[in-house]
Length: 67
Figure 1 (spheres, rainbow, N blue to C red):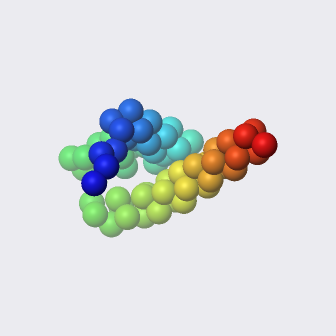
Figure 2 (tube, rainbow, N blue to C red):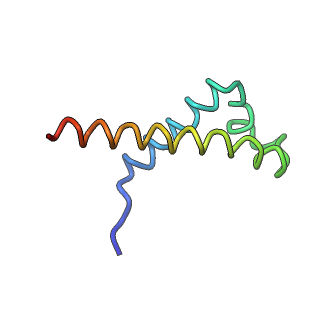
Figure 3 (cartoon, rainbow, N blue to C red):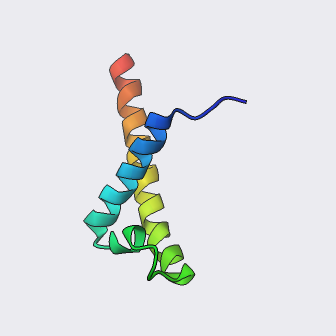
């Protein structure tokens, strides 16, 4: 089984926090003491969706640039 590059993990965590800040919900990801599981679920959905969109955009751009 291959190992995930630690730099990729770090980059994804940074992207998650950046998107959460853009959505105004960064507290939900940085303050682990005062967060309920329901808040976490509702915060994670929009952030995960935008992360997926951005990763697809990056991949599409790389494919276009390769041609």
